[in-house]
Length: 611
Image (tube, rainbow, N blue to C red; front, side):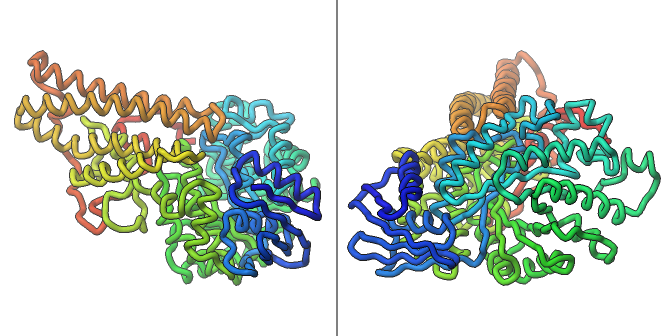
């Protein structure tokens, strides 16, 4: 297929650029572009000759996505987004810094979906003049890389926004670098307010963002800092009025933003907390970013938003697609929480963001969230594509239907219903230690049949020629491991207590099979990681999965010694099992338990200082 924009050379060049990432098929198409003062697009179709009226540049490419996927619903197709701005935030600070090539393809994809901005959550993962330790060995974006990403996105009307931190979430700096600890740490991961070095640091970061990002918007963080002023600050100043000090800090940071012509945005939780008594002072140039990823009703989100709108008229909202509880996402659950958020936000704010966090090691491939991203962008539109046409758009962008994209949830589906509560079975079964167990996370041996069925479905989907096929293959192997491993902890303890050597020998053989599967999974995870991310951070996955393999080998050696009577007891199995009885419910006993460390040991993996 050849697509020709007959009256705009710049748009034609962008179309040609997009063809580096997507294969168009079908009859040739001619498009006349008509810029108008509207939000959204109007597509008029006359025998493969299209006229596209559009407001923003991204609206034009959204229309192109609909046209090329043959999702045009009639002679005239409309789009009327609920929000003037709708974007996606990608976490690049929890070990996985997205590589430039992956980001470019992602930018084109989200432009075809109508998302007009992409936030890069950075923390310390940015090259900053005057701060050589920022992001060292973390895969930080260089200034040249940021400029390349920004220029590329500009072709498609996608704004790239930096998400930095100016209060908390700076643990990577404080854990590794004494100069930052000595000069600007309060307590835990929180910055030291009223310290000159603190504001020198913040200005260096903001100045770098102003220089390299074209946007006027900058997200300054400031979330989740309940321990603020309880460390070095309290040692120096004693007990103070937190609201007053916090207000002073916010003003200083916002003044720095104003100095460089930037418009600051901050997560709203700390402002909501301190604003309840009426003493909090907000700078005029600050937007509060209200957020929640958990609620399931419009009314709950309305109440959440009201806490921010009481403080200022400048409010945006952030929902999320759950990519931060393990290797597999929760797309179904994400719709359960995001749809009511859209309904609540559409009459209250003009900016809606979908976050893709990467907590506890960025294990989950970001592409596995695409089904939910498609559904949310469509839902946030007054005129929605029907399911058939939305799947046509999905197939064009990914090679898979919407339903097939939601198969990325399968590693966690060990029950016969949608994933509409927090579940991450695939992670805690994978890492469950066969000698130690986890007290509150028992396993149901009936899950094996689900892992088996889901493995087969994912393998079939992985055979397709698509940029997404590797994720299906990765998840199929995850199910294969968990099919073998599920219930083995309980069987092992029972067989040991009964001194059933024949059964223990069978379990030892099964562990050998699991070890082989873990080796395959580790290699597949490495492939998936390097497709999306820079190599920095993959060492954590290597350590975790390599450690899983080594631990399984240890368990097998101990079992074999016991079977062969080289040892008389296995001390770990002599302990009384304190696991709680499995809850029988509509989710077949599945639950949520995201911490890698707490899954693999009752001891400590690392030293964590209190302050």
